[in-house]
Length: 387
Ligand SMILES: *Cc1c(COP(=O)(O)O)cnc(C)c1O
Image 1 (spheres, rainbow, N blue to C red):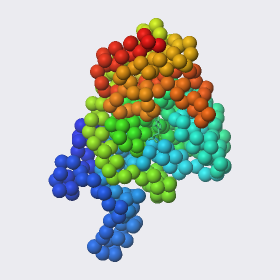
Image 2: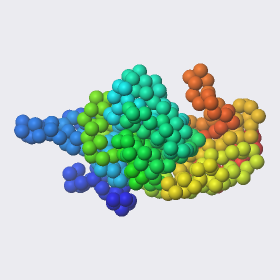
Image 3: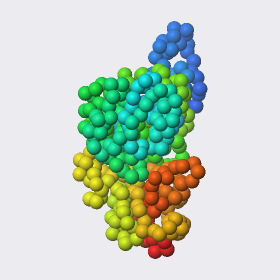
Image 4: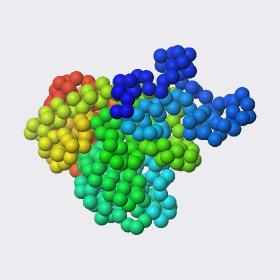
C-alpha cells in the first residue's frame, strides 16, 4: 500500500477543514457549481477531471472516494461509476474501435460477456474467449488487430484463475491494454497492478460497499488512462454515481478490512466443512487444495474471498430446492459482498432468458457473510440433512 491501510480508509482525501470540520465529509448534493469570475469558470472548464463544474464529471464527495479507491488498488487514479458493469463497459469501449479484436477469459461476468458478444459485436469489434487457465492461450488467440485483454481472476462462479503476471507480459509485448475484474478479491487480497495489469475494475456493489444498499463500480489505473476514459466514455455514457451513493460507499470502506477478512475467515471454515460432507460432491474455492489451480491461487492472492460454489449430491432439482428452502440463514438472492450470507442455486437462473444453461443443476453458489461461522455451518448441516 502506498499509504497505511487504516489511514487510507479513515483519513485519506477527507480534507475536513473544507467540510466544516465535520468528522464525516458532507454529501455535496449539488448538480452544478458556480464561480466568482468568468476567468475562474474558464479555468475549471479546462480541468473537469479534477475540479467541480458539473456533477456528471466531478463531484467533491465522489472525489474523496476516488482517492481512496486509487490508493487501495495502488493506482494513480480511479473513477467511480454508477455500476460495475458501467465501469467495465466504459473501460473496454475507451480502448477499442471498429475492426479491433479483444481476447477475454471464458465465462466472465454475465454482463461483460453480453457487452462483448452482443453490443460490441454490433459495432465491428470481435472477441475471442479463451481458457485462461493457460496464459499462453491469450497469446495464441492474438491477431494483428488485437488491442485489449480482459481477465477476471478468479471469476465469481467457478473460480478459474489466470496467471496475471503472464497475461500482462504478453499484453505488454504487443502494446495491448489489459484489464482485470478484481471484484472477487477486493483490493485487499489481490492488486492486479502489481502484476503489470493496466486497468482494474470492481463492482463496488460487492465487497467495497459491503452493505447491500448501493450499486456502484470502480475503474482504477494510470492518470493518463483515467483521463482518457473520463474525457470520452465516462462523460458520454454518463453512468456517474450519485453523491449520496459515493458517500455510502465511503461509509462502507471504513470497515472494509474488518468485513472482508471476517468473510474470508468464515469462508475458510465453511469450505472445509462442506468438503468433508458426504452430500456435497464438489466444493469450488481457490484456497482448497483440491482446487485445480491451488498453487497459482496461493501465489497470486493474499487470501481468498467469501464466495464458494458447491455441487450437491442431489438426484433432481427438487432436492436442490429442498436444500435451499430449508436454510434459515442464507438468503436466496443474487449478488454478494454484503454483511449477509446468501445462496443462489443455478437452477433458479435457468429458463427462457437462458442464463447459465451449461452448468449442472446441482450447483449452488454460496456467499459467506460476516455472521458467526458456527451458526452458518450448523444451518448448512441441517439443510443438507433435509435435501
Ligand atoms: C456484480 C459483478 C459485476 C457487475 O457489477 P454491478 O455493480 O452489478 O454492475 C462485475 N463483475 C463481477 C465479478 C461481479 O460480481
